[in-house]
Length: 118
Image (cartoon, rainbow, N blue to C red):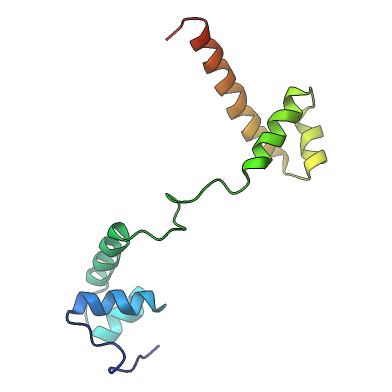
């Protein structure tokens, strides 16, 4: 991807790297375009991403399906087995098992706290 010089004339090389990256150019392509080292471009981009996180990065994401976990917990509390829950909700057994395991651990921890344990 070659971008016209008139479009991208930021003051610094780092600013130009950030702009090219934001316009969809890969780090390797930016390094070739600007005739610089990949590691330098990578460092600049990583620093930029750290200081300007995107709203849909892993840190900012909400759980994908918060209601899925609550439905699994409700069915488990109703006495359904992991296989029955997976079949009912059309989910993978391993995914249901993982959520149930975490739920059971959280319940045990809560019970332990309520009994005066630390």
